[in-house]
Amino acid sequence: MKILLAGGSGQLAQELQPILLSVGEAIAVDRTRLDLSQPESIRQAMADIQPDLVVNAGAYTAVDKAESEPELARAVNGIAPGILAEECEKLGASLIHFSTDYVFDGSKSSAYLETDSTNPLGIYGKSKLAGEEAIRQAGSRHIIIRTAWVYGNCGKGNFVKTMLRLGKEREEIRVVADQIGSPSWTADLAAATAHIIPGIGLEDFGTYHYTNSGVCSWYDFAIAIFEEAEKLGFPLKVQRVIPITTVEYPTPAKRPAFSVLSTVKISALLGTYPPHWRQGLRQMLAREMK
Image (tube, rainbow, N blue to C red; front, side, top):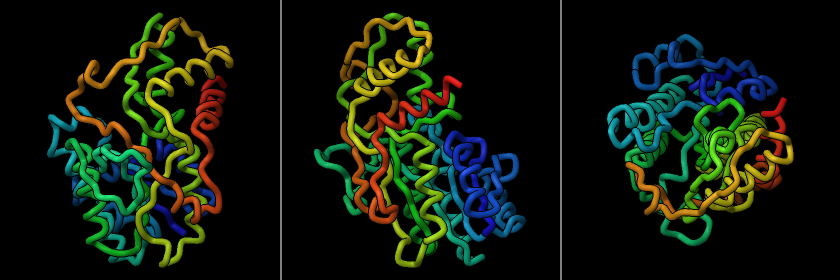
């Protein structure tokens, strides 16, 4: 099986490439070969590589910046996935695409199902939803995996890396405590993705949710990061983590207050529930220390 991995320089793709080699010939391409903002670049790369499966780990992920760059966000997140899906249809290939909890408005108080109504609050969420819809219109041979609060060892600006940096520099850190979700370690997400590829059948195509198990606030997550990092001997200066409200930390983009995703559907496909987020965090930090 020939697998085209788009977004090759991103934190998820860097985690995916080595594990995808266990299921096929994985060819990772970054924007120098496949620029998701340029339709012709996408079509050319697809024609050159002729994949059996495309895994699109590329996205415009700067949530706040998207508010001032809506055209670029829409090109990468909204239009490009549809073009990938169209080219997959022509080749008889399948597509795995990653989407986000930000397609929801956060007004629910129980875990979001794949069938729940979407209502994104900002440009980023709207662009990701547009990408989902473009894929569905283009063909049926796809899996869309919505995930949330993604962090990994290969990323630079993710929440865990940011907290480790701030924890080394400051004695006091203020973290939002009224946004609730489920962190997702890229290694667990990549392993789940690779696990479902060999057995994908026509009945399996559709939309799924994947995050690590368990629920927390950003504040809870920060506390856990510092607790686990301290055990491992990370150099930390932080003494106090202060819980604050979203109102006290204004950002250009509105974020869903509650974006826990139900993983029941994908767990049935995997045959197991995702590992708990704290376990993923512990493993990520242990890897970071090496």
